[in-house]
Length: 113
Length: 117
Image (cartoon, rainbow over the protein chains, first blue to last red):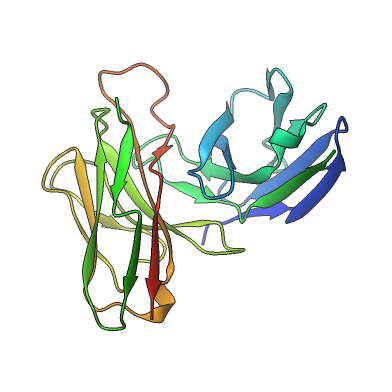
């Protein structure tokens, strides 16, 4: 079946350093890739997304890159801050029909002050 | 707007008991989804609905039933709870025909923590 692999499962960085989380998807028809941030005990919240007609998208300290050929996409967080500490989930979706998501298993990011 | 809300926030059940989780959204979304979240396994889709009166199975539907009698509500039922159903349950919704923003973005409720003893 379709799946999304996400790595690493945990990531610790020093405050101010960059963090990169990588995902690989199996369904070549996927064309929408959101990233969600989930703080402890809270709901997942969308932080950035990218569609397959775009290779890169930035929003302040956060960027996402997409390599359709390799079926990889990555989240990049620069100048990390303690409030970036959370679990991050990637997902892949065919942006049509049911708009179902297949989620990765999550990355726990710890930003050390 | 309240967005997506879920009732209850927390519940303890004994094996074999039944319960219904309620999800409500006020964004006029067509699509609604139920997920379960377990440590190390991300979010897995249980059932979903693409409109009032419709439901369909997701990745892990066994032991659950759903109904969408009204567009704004999506109910998840456990007929005979099992310890394996201990989890955090999230509801999400997406796709407004009349609203702005992407059709694809799913908005999540605050979750229901369920413990089955």
